[in-house]
Length: 407
Image 1 (tube, rainbow, N blue to C red):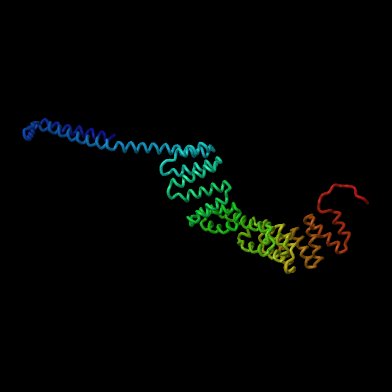
Image 2: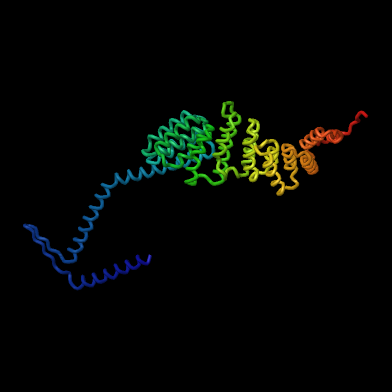
């Protein structure tokens, strides 16, 4: 606003100066060309010349504007088309989030415009997938691949994800392997490949990929550890339950077990798997191997189930086995399950008096059916029939109703 006032004042000032000179004298201009003669005052000539210059300038500006008009109209039209396409794309994505998959696909395809239309194809393929129209989804994925040069990776990863959701695990694995060959250093391809192996229960392949994912921090530490435990667990479980020769070979089972990192073995969630592993070794008759493994496991996973198994195994050196269990008792003097295990190991070492003491100490801590059975067996072997009968009279630790009994 201040600038306008300044210009207005400047024009008034200029006009006043010009008027002053015009009053001083009109001047005289004579122009002669062949038979033409023009005579006029100086100020009229200046006005005519100024009008002529302004007319020429206006004409040139008008011609330029007329030439540029088609381009401007085209640019305006394209901009308007892009705005419409963006609006339809946004609407399609909103429909997709709301679960209206039919309208989502329709809006996204209507908004497929320009260089960014690959996004519309991928979104429409997702909508068709969620609507259960897998053939249409595949068609749209093919269109997405053709629509944009250099989008093979993005389209391939989306295709693998859709195949995984459809439970087409073999096709998903084939897609991931193709992408891995094309883009060997792309880490998300490795992550997608791991998902495909997990879906196919190929846990050995999962364990081979995990270090690469951890190196590039594509998995959180907790997630990686949990996945590693699951993978080793599935491998051991498969070997235990399978009917092939490896399930009956303790060495094959131990080969898998010994490859498990120590940090993984120490994890708390690993104790159920350790129990299943040792129990299977015992069932196979590999007592010495089972005892060795339990000695390495128990310091990290001292559970009632595992310490109970330690009383079932017959190690290579029963005295060493007894010493190990007694060392554990120093830290847990009133552990009923450990006392029961110590009684059994004493029996293994022919220490029957000490075994009885451990059994009785265990029973004083916990009314356990196994402990009563062990004591009954020991009393009978020692011809202490009355004590053995007393164990039977007290039952197996179960509460029974009061009923009349014969005299």
